[in-house]
Image (cartoon, rainbow, N blue to C red; front, side):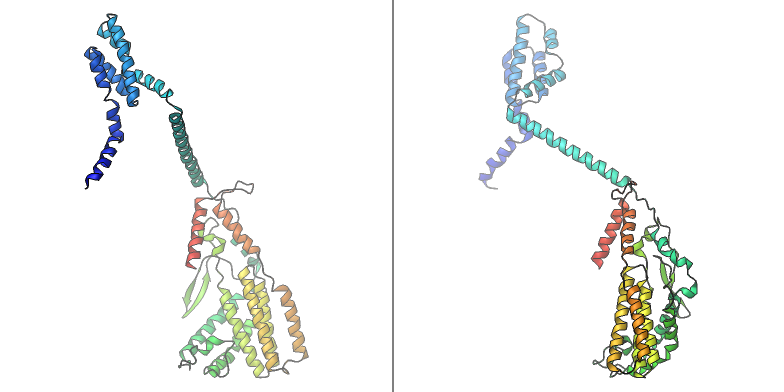
Length: 421
């Protein structure tokens, strides 16, 4: 270490808080030694001055005043015990002296003291306020009053099994899944020019694809099941009960989706946003099969079957459009658009296929489904939001409330899911 740094360290030591405390009392000892007072009196004055904890010059002034007081008493021939009694108990006397001397300090010191007190009060109030808010936060709990899943299931409870289309759709999708696996295993595609199996290209499987003949034969053999699907499009609803709980259960070598009863509304898993809609994928896959079978029927000049499948597609879109969820309505629009595209394709490739009666039937079905099945339903979106509010916030009964720990967990879950997405 260089010598130039020594004065810096020395200055730091001299001006440290401990050194200032030591220096503050160094002027008192000489004053007491020069006073000529008895040793007990000097010790009492020294104790009083030390307990005042004042600045150095203030301590010296206090020491001089106490020495003068003791000397006056000594000149009056008062004994040492009387002088000690007149000086009083060091602790309370020092406290009174300190308070009096500090009041005489300048405006800068007073301003600093009051600013320090104000800052300390602000910090204390902040801590108390946050403590009260924290206690209030953890003391709150949501009041889950409405079971929205039960409200959605009420209309379905009145449906008989023969009015539930999902039963037919699921059986058809399981049957086609078995056939789809067989087609994938027996695919003729083996080169890089045709990387996708033909069964994955339905309904836009081109005739030149190597798998075209095999897939076409499989769809023709599947027509009895497609006829059952087309008949199921006339049922009033999909009909599967809504629930956030369900799983695939394997039976007889096939996996079937089993919907479990919804949990109680107070259960965190009962949150409406967790409701599962497994039939949307099944329905859309069957719609692609119906569209492809319609093009096959048109190539076979079978106008009745072509019209039958196109009508089934439109009815399927209307059936999905009556579901209460926004995503169901969007899938309905996609199936309706698939029906329109298939109709345009058939009309372009086979302009003389459909007769007047076929066209009238299609136009009537198209008009009916456009008015009843292509309206997006936002009611459940509002229910999603209301269900979140009742699970995340308290309810004072007047439309107001505050966030709860359960709500914070829900928000964290949403944020984590968004990041994963």
